[in-house]
Image 1 (tube, rainbow, N blue to C red):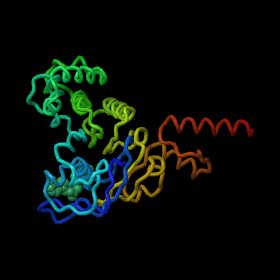
Image 2 (cartoon, rainbow, N blue to C red):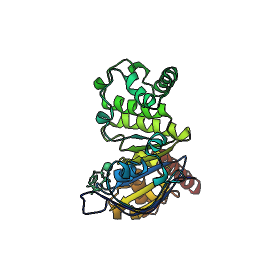
Image 3 (cartoon, rainbow, N blue to C red):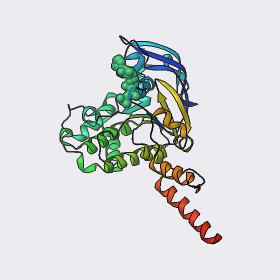
Image 4 (tube, helix red, strand yellow):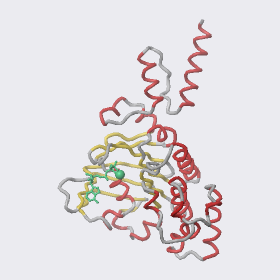
Length: 287
Ligand SMILES: Nc1ncnc2c1ncn2[C@@H]1O[C@H](COP(=O)(O)OP(=O)(O)OP(=O)(O)O)[C@@H](O)[C@H]1O
Ligand SMILES: [Mg+2]
């Protein structure tokens, strides 16, 4: 069973004269981190809204093509059921907090209460998740007083507590400093290790290179490249869609142009360092 199987999907928002998704097709497996990149307005958030079922249930418009989520056609999903199968964290941690609860603990509990989970189970689940994310010291604080990074962790805690099988995460680090961004990616890695399927829209390409299993490039509402991260981010085609490759890819390409091919295209600094060391060792032996 696949996470998502989309065939020739077109969607035009009501009152819009241009399709936001325009002949989009893709196939995503479960249990992976699927990175999504593309210029502004290329349809990334619209794709997330479709997978979460808020298109066409909440945003009205014209939808055509085939959309299958977790092995079931979109129209066969009950919207409430789909929203519990798919958790979501979106770009702005300041709007994600409900603002109607006095403590972080209560804030994280909202989703579970809505699911009708018994009080004791809620306490148990929230306690475990705040420990796991290292935010146990925040539970009695007012959510409105938290920093951006702390709010984003609370948003993650809410969906982790609900134990959704799929997480759709739209630019989770856009408001965060590099250190908090790295922490958020570590949370995402933990979710993947726990077997979750993750759709991750992110502009920080170096972080995607290190954490995503596949990359899908959107352009004008269509998928123009999709495949394993190394293949897509290492490809010279990327430039045609105005996506800058990771720093280490730029380095490897320059070395290759100078006649010093590193072999496997590195995706992280660690991989690049290893490849350079191996080349140096070869050169030393030859000498
Ligand atoms: N609620 C809406 N109503 C009408 N048009 C919309 C709506 N949301 C998005 N659009 C339009 O749909 C197209 C795709 O937008 P979308 O937000 O999916 O792009 P994106 O890739 O997420 O962009 P960004 O990088 O800025 O977040 C754009 O032309 C946008 O103006
Ligand atoms: Mg967006």
